[in-house]
Length: 266
Image (cartoon, rainbow, N blue to C red; front, side):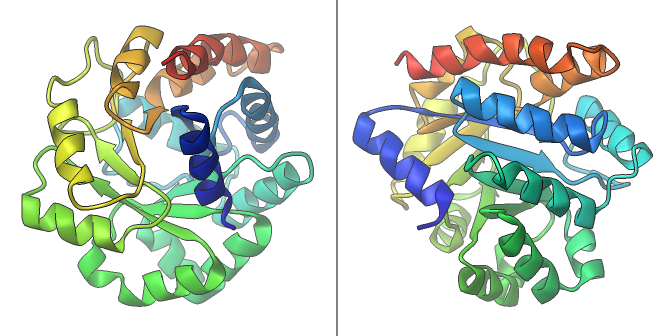
């Protein structure tokens, strides 16, 4: 069974909510990415989203754009990200999702890249700029490889389109809880419960809620509405602050631990 599906099945059986971390691959370097992944697994993180650095990350706010820039500067390429996933797999079975732009897949060759991702130990992909209407061949190849194709739903997504998107998704649905790009916010959106209920009317897939969640209190609030909480920019910001510190892994772990605990104490 796919690791993402397996993890959410286990969480549902145990009556637990999931915690998903997003970081930029190769920020500050690929060895740090490997070590962070292993540290997150030990902390009880349920899914790791690895951003694959891209020169024009349109869906990302400043914090994640800068992380992508640092990743590119450290020499991170899609094949090197897959090498890191392979290295993580030697010590951990944490479910891994690639957060990626379609140009990078297309440049490599869709079939070739998906096959390589599966062989490396990737479990799913969230292709930011690939709409479901244009992803027939991509979805078929993902299914063949045993990978989950994860789609986004936004607050502005109309009802009929929500239905189309969720019927084509696999693994989980990523609900973007606010309009605009990624980034830390002082408070969570007040429409999360209403929107997750609307999505749930069309699917039995777990709903992961992200964008703007940056404190344990916010994570706990959001976990009441979704099956999982995604925290990205707040963690990426910690990596930006402590990237040159010898105790980077420890500092980031200390920041993530209370977030995980807040979500698990539902």
